Image (cartoon, rainbow, N blue to C red; front, top):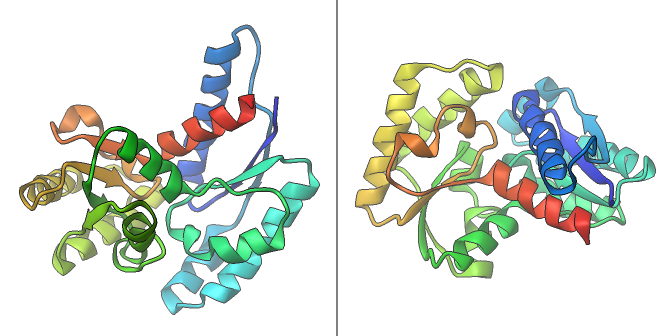
Length: 230
């Protein structure tokens, strides 16, 4: 069994989901008392979040690159960055280590293409929804059209992520807002919705809507489970 590296803590709420899903996946595949071989470094999110707001991405990249080096040194065979937003600095992290990184946008695109989805709505932080490191990658590398909410709804989505979900708070009104936005994106032509922030699955489930949802956390974990077995 390969050892998976988890670069987490952004937030720890979603990293906990990665740990649980990886171990459940291995137990399902192998049975008995089997569990996943994991090396995890969970960063302090407070300074990372401040650097995000300040636009100091290179400084954030340095912190995460140092953490990734420690994961590699501890014996991980490959790495998952347990957040969509911080894939903005994936190129810098990748240059700092020798083990491969499973990119969350690429693994999501792989599933979308397999299912014949050509147009998707994207929910996530403002950084993920507005900048090209994520939606641009989906469009240019994978030829998937990406629709994002309007600026007012982007602010609502972003605020709920940072002010509630990252702090473990689940509010019914926030869920209603997300479902309203999902319905609107469907009207605009989205065949499915990417839950492009690893905390959103705390708030929204497939049972809440008839629009197909693509949970990036689960997709990322499933790809890691495939890699572990190879």
